[in-house]
Amino acid sequence: MRAIAGALVAAAIAFAAWRAGSLSRSGAAAALFIGTIAIAAGWTWGALLTVYFVSSSVLSRIGVRVKAQRSGSIVEKGGARDAPQVFANGAVFAAAAALQLLYPSSIWLAAGAGALAASASDTWGTEIGMLAKSPPRMITTWRTVPTGTSGGVSTLGLAAMVAGTLFIALAAWLLHWNSGNAHVALAVSVGGIIGALVDSFGGALWQSRRYCTRCGSATERVVHDCGTETERAGGLGWLNNDGVNAACTLIGAIVAVGMLRLLQ
Image (cartoon, rainbow, N blue to C red; front, side, top):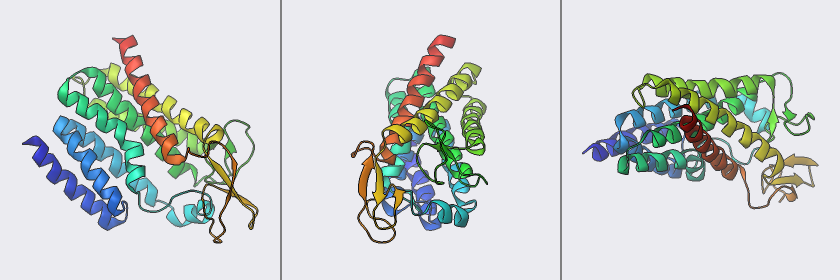
């Protein structure tokens, strides 16, 4: 019965997000799937997922014109999130929810919240960091790079990363995950920050980079704004931003579980 109720609630939220332009049709379908599993595992799982999604959607709408102007020609995807983006950020959380449903344990609570914290940390750092007055610097070389470049960080963005992690950790604690155990909040905080840092390093070192020979500019797009097919300029050709985000959430979950075991 809770799964049925969860499907109805998730459908309502996904439909509203689609109408608001936050999700594409495929993204809404993916959100429905993840939301249903989350609520089936427990209403607190659904509540934490909703808190994450609403906060991320709100931040994505702040300064949207400035962000588009600064990074529109660089980022691979913009606008409404599609299914690959939704699964990249929510699949690990959904897997933890499914395992919690089948084999209840504080381990899956830490894993699920750790995955969301890492995703929130990355999202907050990106959405707020793109509004920084100074251009970001590549995390591996500290050289200035264009806004929107994967692996680029700024003081404002790093502060936002920490805030995003603490936001999810605090939400998990207030929702009394694992009976409100503070150990879970601490484990989630560490997992979220490390996961987001892995995302930044992954974007700088391994994510596919491309180059537009016509415009003479770096980008993540296969086809640039000018209509020219771009050429590979580095990184792993098969690893895009969605893949890096998925790794970020997985690391966040693993580190959170490891920290919880150390603290207990």
